[in-house]
Image (tube, rainbow, N blue to C red; front, side, top):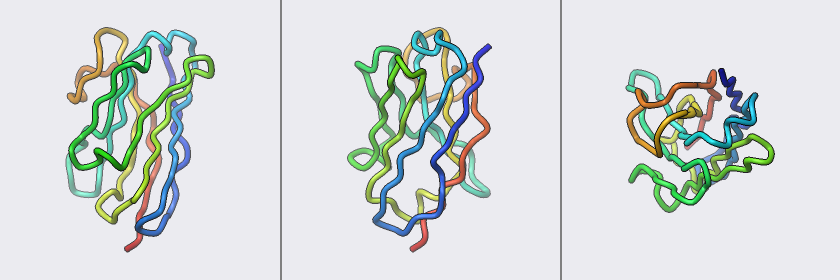
Length: 124
């Protein structure tokens, strides 16, 4: 079992930047692919970005490509999502997820472990 805890969400002005963190409870996290998802009010949860266990492969939703960067530090059992040029439409609860078998995927049902989420609000 892996517990994931997100942090870093807050209120920010449009055009600003935030870095979200996802701390994992076990060192086995370093063997898992990781993803960030988000859910805005009244909308379905959507994929934002994913990274392989080694960090060598990354994948982004078109809506964030060029603005967001996913990374991880396996020595610290922590993943990150650097968000730049934030827009009002980025407002959502952001979740990190880990997948124990397989690589990066945009489909949420492939991920076994989820954090509780962190709120990001972008004011326009």
